[in-house]
Image 1 (cartoon, rainbow, N blue to C red):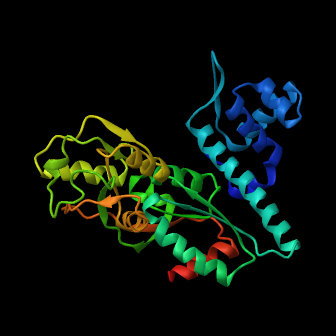
Image 2: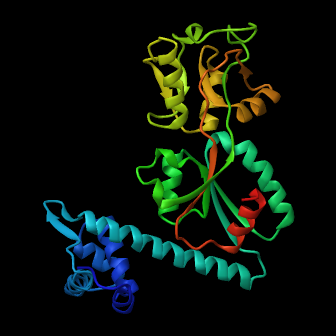
Image 3: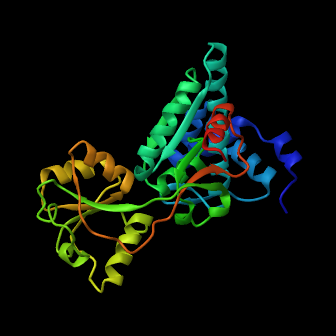
Length: 305
């Protein structure tokens, strides 16, 4: 039986949590002890104390050293969150003492970048003293960063997670999609094309199980076509655009906002292909139960949710 929260809070120490993180990173009791400033016997005693406090074994010994079991992985994940939150507390306090307005760490998927940057500029004009860290990646990676406490919030999708119940989310914008290519792609000047016309093309796509990739696979199934075998997989908008610039035969699926932005600067052409499937909306996502900083709360209010 697990001890009460009061018991955990009164008996656990930050150095013990740092030791768990070091053990997970290094897999060696000797190296972990050295990193946190303990002797090896002291580290062994500290680990035993944590396991006694929690009433569970956290690590198993393997040929490659100590390896966290399922309970250990859970405890280490929250130990990292505590360490990250303390770091963020220090940064925010330092910013306030220097007369700044705090810091906001924000993640976004590629398709939401035009929508988010427009809102972010309005936000910065209202709150010029707030520093902003903006991270672009796929939904899976952004949720991982949220889990670690490295992001305050993210514009992404929780449907790709096995544990969407870990997050609070609200839909903030519907997404439409467009197929884009080099300005000199053979289909760029046509009035209408079908997916079959692009069946043999090399597509630049997200990795498997990402919402945009799954939508494209569904489009091919509904059209009775085999999904292309030879792909270029990337989460980078810049890599996608660079590939389309270098090779006129490549095509890619982008959000309509990104496609319109690229088209307006003459970087790509939107191909005249009508997609049948509807994309999932963008969600504004935070970790359920996690404290929300004043800067993050101000941005949430900017979204009107």
